[in-house]
Image (tube, each protein chain N blue to C red):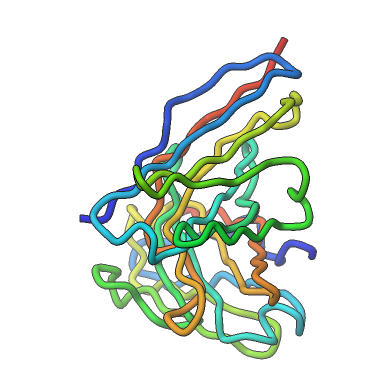
Length: 110
Length: 121
């Protein structure tokens, strides 16, 4: 299956909100309530930020929220902080024990 | 504390074989899937597949089927990813993740620190 489509980069100023989109198809994002988002700082392992479209693991600030509409999922980060600057990857279940990632989005906090 | 600890960086020549590892601790290793993910330099994450340590059920992404082999040794809570004949294009960072699959959700909640594989002559 093809990778999910994410913008290559987004940016925002401290305190602002940004939204990162992740577009797939009816065979992945549109077909399941199983989208997850991962934050990855340079040289570090991915960190789970959102699962099941909109749920936050313990310890993830409520500034991070997720949603889905049709074949597009979104990650919104409000009250941007400098430490939010990182790459963000979306992932969706695509059926038959398979998953697909997006190409990743670099968030710059200006 | 849940931890996944991966083996160290490897430098190999084309044609060589390689097996990297991912040791889980702090949880019931046989009750969660292990996912493997590739990240080529400067690129995004790629789903390689998952293996269930409880019964070694393994599911590969079509892109990686036949290119790698996943296995586990549940006696030492360790999962493996191996290549029989490396190519330069296999150079990448590889991550393992504890993966939930089923009624509990579909995501990786803990990750190893990554193993960098460099294949060069």
